[in-house]
Image (tube, rainbow, N blue to C red; front, side, top):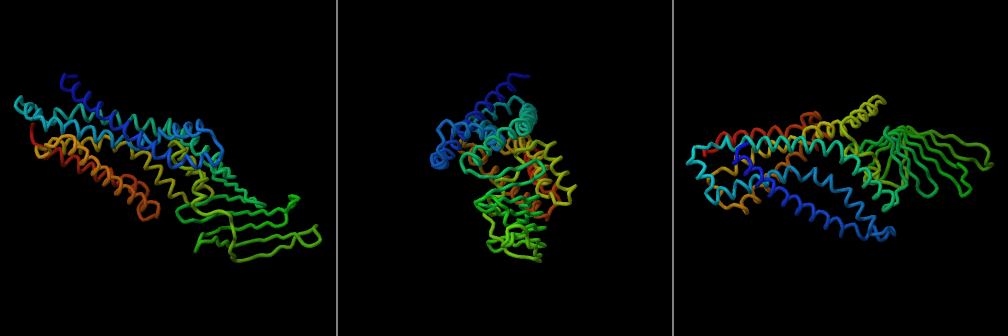
Length: 360
C-alpha cells in the first residue's frame, strides 16, 4: 500500500466516523424525545429506555453506513479538489483509476462489514428492542412464533391467527374465543380468512358456536361472511408479526418455505430476502459513483458540495429503492428484480461517471 493510498483511506475514515457519530447522535436524540413520554407512562426507568436505544443503534448503523461512506468519499475528494491536490497529482501523471483502486477496496470491505452487521448483530438487537417496545412499553398481549402463529388477548377475547399477509391486509385461519367472567367459553368463531375493508374486518367461511341458555351445549351457525369487531388493526398486526429485520438470511428463507408449504403467499418476505442480499452491495456501488462525481473539476466547493451531492444521491437511491420494493410487495415486479433494480441503476451510473472522469 502506497503512502497516497494510506492518506486517502485515513482521510475517508476520518470523515466517515464524523458523519456516523453525527447521524447516530441526531437519531438517538430524536428517538429519545419522541418516546420518552411512552416510557414514563409505562412506568419504566430511564435505564430501560437507554437499553432500548442502545439496541436500536446496530440497525441505525446498518442503514446509514452506505450514506456515510458516500459522504466521506465526496467530502475527501471534494476537499482535495478545492485545495488543488488533484491538480498536483495530475501533474505527477497519476490517473483517477489509480486513486480509485484503494477506495473500491475500501468499499468492498464496507460491503462485507455491512453484511456481517445485518446478519449477525441486527436480528438479535432488533428482536430485543421490539420486545421492550411491544411488551414493556405498549403492553401488547401478543406472541409471535416462527411459523407466524399470532395470539392476541383483548378484554374477554383470545384470538389466534394462523397467518397474516400485511401486503393484502388479510388474515388466514382465524379463531376467536370469547369468555365470561368465570372464564367459561361462551362463543367461538372459526373463519377461513378475514379482510380489512372500510375500517373493519370482514370474515368469510365462518362457523360460529354459541353457548345456549342451559349453559351445557353450543348452537352452531354457519355464515358466508360477516363483519367482526376485532380489537386490532393492520398497523397493530404489523407490529406483532415477526419482522424480516429480526431474522438472518437462513432463518428468513426457512420462514418463507414454512409459509409457502402451508399454501400461504410469502411475496413480502421473498422481497425482503433478496433485499437483505442486495443492500450491502450499495456500499461499493455508491463509492464508485462518489469518486466519479468528486473528481470532476467543477466540484470545487469542498465540504458543502460534498454534503449536498451525498444527500442528493442518497435521497434518490432511497426513493427509487422504496418504489421498487413497493412494486415487489404488490407483486408488480418479481422479488429479485424489485430488490436489485436500484443497485443495477446506480452501478451503471457509477461506471459511467468513472469512465467520464478526467485523467488526473
